[in-house]
Length: 157
Length: 157
Image (cartoon, rainbow over all chains, first blue to last red; front, side):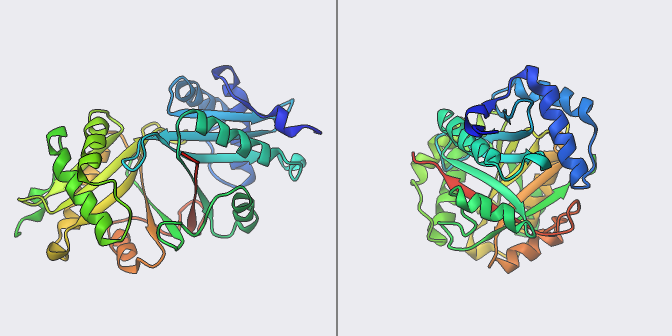
């Protein structure tokens, strides 16, 4: 893949099956429960029809994806974006594909008036943290001068 | 305030000035830049008219607020909620008002089909972390067995 950047593109609803397969592979690789590609694709078709979710793909055939959700925030005029998922198939890592997705992510966010992009990264994923820091993301938050932890609580479904 | 729980309530658009004043006080107390109560109130009137933001208030007169945004997520049928802000005026802390807001937050989220509530907490806020852990929030994430850090990148406005 000599020109990864040119191959990163925004996914359409027609790409839902492709994005879903990659997200499923992501979960399988990292031993996370997956509802399966078909169920993910169904949900993606609904989410990608709305403006608060978009997805990116890279590679022919697609070997990498990013999934992004937007929400309002009282401190910014535009939405805040969260990079929910970023996955590159194992055989194609370290070729700039992840970087190409991040560059397109930033462009797509800027086009939507996004002023802040957020990511949550597991503490042991040191390489992933370095990757995001190389791309301008801060672990030490500029306003507080310190790191922030992610907390979550699931509600009984 | 003997019955803090009964006094926690969902804010309406008419409460925008009240919520804004408390969010402004929050920023002033923690040396964070604030656009000022009037500008915050303007934005809140717009946000609270939509379903992806809600706010809570507690106290008569109001002395505490919570601000919550919702977004879609591919892993859940319903939206995911982020507790963006939680503030109790200094003179009225340690009286259960924050807990009353969290209890109402959970109820309001459950009523909206939310299955996951998220919070980002600064690393040095040990008391705040303990508070959320007492209320069922996890620092060590159940799926990964580890902590996660929050990363962010501002885009040039």
